[in-house]
Length: 363
Image 1 (cartoon, rainbow, N blue to C red):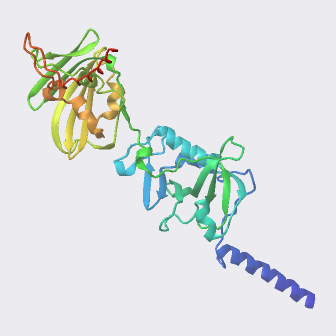
Image 2: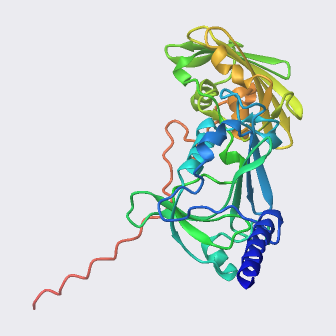
């Protein structure tokens, strides 16, 4: 009888324990294989096809990169920059890095030691850690607190400290992740790069003044107005380089802010023309672009956007005639000499000492 009662109690205990685990005597956490060499996110590769958002949280700011659909051709864009395209290679590097990240060895589980590794709470004041989240339509599919990164001890790769949110154990992991929350590191900053020797002509219209430049004997020359003061050759060269290695400082949907300064039309050897409208808002110089001709499609990505460019580009894109004038030589300080005039010495000659008296003749 006692044996039967004991069996009943044991069975009841098993059922109660099972119910407690299932329905919440305590929170259930998914267990992960964290042995050395195992993937941090073993099932992530197959789930990235459904990812639609990447969040990078650091020092009180959040960078959001998103795409509207899960179509593989969909562009990842910077959310707070009106979905302007992010660098595709950098997005790919981050996502691939997460799928390849592997545990190396456990480090601290003491919260007081987290700052030393850079894996403290990212929302804490003065925190140096970075939280990375990848989300699909249902929520996060991968999230990780990323700390300090360094070259591995063997010098053959990269390692970094990581910790899962809501877990106490910090780890050293093998891999590298681009996790900067600085938007400028994610924007594709390259706009146009047309070498100076490809530019055959430039027409500038600013404030009602029109300047026409044409290449003659490999040199860009002002042809209209034909009568003009002597121009600085280096400033003329800058006009030819106006579209060379042009990059953005910021971007926003067109139209450009501020007041219009003028317009420049660059014509290339192959007949492509690039029109640049330049505006100024405070000290910032902004430009919009339109292209026609053989290579217009390659510049189509610029359509619909206004770009802040370096302020030094203003005089290369929409110069005035006064901007191009050669410097007037400084007046000479040398005295003017009249014909036949012998200048007086600037310093009186030093008199030579008198020779000693001759010795007296012998008597």
